[in-house]
Amino acid sequence: MTKRRPSNKKPTGVNKSLGNALANDRERTRTAHRRAKYEGEYELENPALMDTDKPKEKNVDSITDQSSLDDFLARAELAGTDFTAEKCNFHILPTISEVHVVPTKEDISNNVELQKKYSHKLKIPRRPPKHMWETAEELITLENENFLEWRRSLADLQEVDGLALTPFERNLELWRQLWRVVERSDIIVQIVDARNPLLFYSEDLSSYVVESGIGKQNILLLNKSDLLSTEQIDLWRKYFERNKLDAVFWSALDEDHADECEQSTSSAPFIRTTEKLVDYFKERGHVSQMPAGRPLVVGMVGYPNVGKSSTINRIVGEKKVSVSATPGKTRHLQTLIIDPQVTLCDCPGLVMPSFSFNRSEMLLNGILSSDQMRDHFGPIDLLSMRVKRSTFEKLYSVTLPKPADHEDPDKPPSAHEVLTSIAFMRGFMSANGVPDCSRAGRMIIKDVVNGKLNWASAPPGFDQDEYDKLSSAEYLTIGTQKGQSSLAQLEKRHLLEGDNARCNYLDKGFFSLGGKEVHIKPARQEQQPEVDGSKKHKKGKKMKLRNVYGHLDF
Figure 1 (spheres, rainbow, N blue to C red):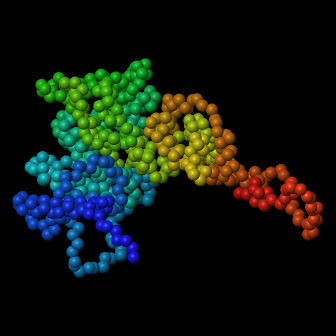
Figure 2 (figure 1 turned 45 degrees about the vertical axis):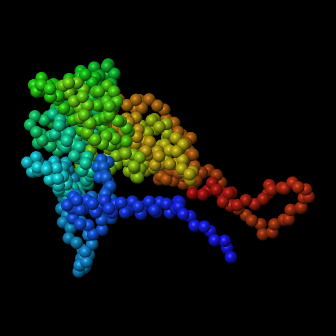
Figure 3 (figure 1 turned 90 degrees about the vertical axis):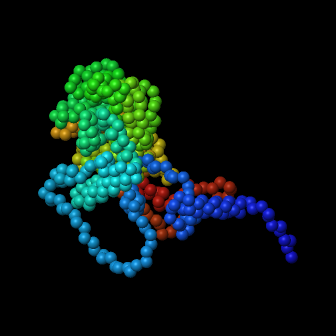
């Protein structure tokens, strides 16, 4: 008979937490009863199910991609749909549903005309006018309805055959930040990347600014202009003049280079100092005609990671806004007083819907974070079509495999060749002993975003090859070809899965000058005399065929 253990009077461990949970549950039940009794609310069937916690904070995280389930739940929340289970008669749904798809013309090689046809639906969401609501609850309801209708219109565009809609901002809270910035500001400055300005420019945003109030102005600020040459800046200046867009080139250049750019771009000002930029805002905003005591409010709007916060910190003269290489660092609008006449308003970065580019394009331009990239071959394939083979070799000190004899000598390298060569040269190896292509892909994309590997888009109507020749990148003129030994190691290990590597290896074995070999095994083997001693004579030991003829394996 075993000894009986004494019971613990005070619960410990899991038992103690269980008691606390029961006590908290009773307290929530009493609180729910008091609210329903004294505040005039309806009587709950189970008051314990009532949420008595503090209201949750608003979600201001950028949301560009959603799964089908998350997208369905987000739309249901905006529409106020209730998913209460009800027992009713069931019916069988038809297996074939009617889907109305607008067909495209087969004789058109591109979908430019199709994009123009549906461009009127590609808009940003608007805030409801003030005459349509009186209370805050009515405003929130109208905002949810308008935003849901906007989401439905974009969903209809995705069903059109031939149109590819890019990821866009799906968080209503971030669009509310944009609405507030537009309402407060007298001048809206769209900050874009000078390497590809039209990619970041939203024409519908300019229209919304004009609709929001009389006297509001739009300015296009081309950041990172130091990555362009003087000739490239002059070409973009002429393009903006033809399209009647007020453009300002802005960058942190030295004084000599800035003076040279200002002389060649007199119509479109090239501004380097913050004093000149603030004076330009005052001139456009007619500060002298502003009412006394009211400053000129300048709103900074644009895509993520185009340099809005960096520009504001440079104008202020100290770090007032957090800066990060990760897109979407700014989450709330912030106002900063420059002087008694000018106030800056920083808006969170927003990804506008567009037809003109895909996900790989967004990764190469820094709109989407490279740390969240899943497919690293797509962006590098797109980059290899734009950047020459010699550029990769000189910048990363590697030697890429040459095209085969039957291929075009100007054929761009594949993403596998670029990533494998660079990863092997940098020592990015996985646990299996093969080059880590994903790590090399993230490094290359970050080099493109930071300007180390520079590529700029040409203005519409100008040849891209001629535009690339005007680039002022240093790696195009210096550097030597390196990496021959690493290329030989990759080919020896069969890590380059290209047609050229296979053809060269096959030709080398077929056209070798070595004589023919015949392996003869005698029918009767002579017995070797036994030798005493501890020394083992293994000179004539048979070896496995896979080791003897390993060089013939393919």
